[in-house]
Length: 474
Figure 1 (cartoon, rainbow, N blue to C red):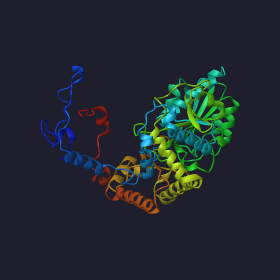
Figure 2: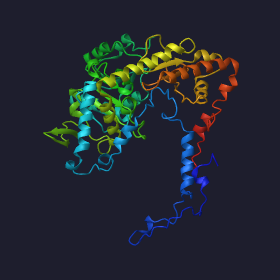
Figure 3: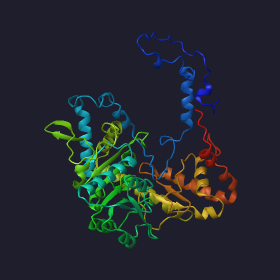
Figure 4: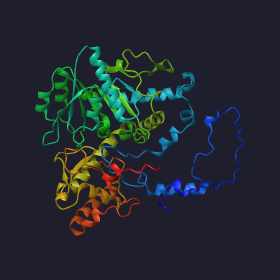
């Protein structure tokens, strides 16, 4: 019973309800719209509650477990944010309502844009994109249209090898040729090789700073000058903006456009289906290409302005995942400038504490001070018989969610650890102890790692078989 899906638990025809069936008048409803049976599982209310409560107990979540999940941060979402986003004035409105009846919602959008402009130094923001990846596409479409408006024919985009995987995919979707620039031994963009690749055909560079190795690109001003001197633009992948809050602004680095994964930095729920939000900010140069509409304020009244001069058009329905934006707004109001600075400082301290505590056993990808995440190479452990995958799976038995594995791909046997700012020293110490204990197990009991996890509801799966022969029955 414990491993059955809900369709297997409910038997057809069983009556588990004491509530009288509602009397519905079907007159006037076309027969094609009616079904004799929806083939739904037949369970009582208590059975349904127990089923889903049981599933919840099997799940890892940031509320119950440590999530050292780099790259895609599972960041704590304060419960007050959830409460505020559920207020009737926010969740019971409709985007087709008259603008006079949703002034509070429009004010949230306007104020959130002003805050993000202040934090990043950008001129304007759009909240239409549903996720970071869609935000990337939005940003690159604006860059493309900007070059077209200037009658500048450009066909290539520079992408460092330390970039997020969506960067080259996004540029390719916009029709660009991808030029990869390698990193130096220190893990930073190779400036000399960048110079050789940039010319008048370069549309942009897509850069993550700090990069996916968790390192700050110290030569960012040189990179900006190299690109701008040839007429290209700088795109900032804001997935790693968490450690820079209150410390610096994206505009000071020379970037022209940025997307912010609000779930990574501003605590909203994760992922496009989660849902998510990939807010996109632009410099004054690109403001005329933003998706329409934008929110404006005239006197004390807020409204949508569809008169964006060279807008790329809509990138999704309506005006974005509004409930997610309310959460981000609540987070910013609650923390203020001093709180945001503390977020950045603590996220960096936590990551460096883990690196300093484990570098004698697990090899850091760079000897440089990291930012909010540290990338370890498990090559030494691999030589002794345990892969990065084995180590990550074994962490489940210690009630720790696995960190990101095998990314970035330029690091062999990579484990990316991102503790975020909200984790306590006790939690970090427990993680460090577990990692050290797992390393000892390689020599003492390798089979325990190879069979891990042993305590989880789902044991080690055959990844190849799962990809080639998925069970899609339900």
